Length: 238
Image (tube, rainbow, N blue to C red):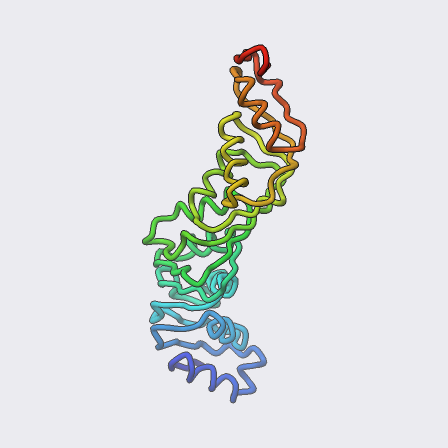
């Protein structure tokens, strides 16, 4: 048994057909070019047959809902893989956004997004995607989940968005004196928030006492400078 129609017609048909809601193997062919992920997932849930979505060129919805449609696989929802996606949520996890980008070769419009959450690496991956893959990003607030974070990675997140980067989860910052100081300076001006009591593990063999003294004033946490083998500076600075 098979049923063909627009997404709206199929939704109405499945609502009227008790046999479909019990998991009958009815194949459904979607004729609409633009659909919501919620509707696709609804059709998939009410039939044991495959949902042919080859006519679909645009999917709208949350990243979670759209990813669920893609995760259904060809045996449940077929014909997907190159659709444009228009997100509808204000807050999105970076991992969900990156997974979605891997699920379609079409462009993802993320203009609705005002907050991105996740690890700094995952957030940077989303920002690194070309505009032809993910568009509409650049001014979002970011809430990080890392406990330990390299200053270079944190600074990269800050450079990727004009929104504030909440690093309140970070307990340890690693990197060179200059990179770590740059992150704390960004915290001072409000580009990065939540820093001030982190432990700092420095890298680099050569250090300057003035830089260490400046850094010491930026965090109440312990600064591990064991990597340093050469110290420059005046007697007073040292």
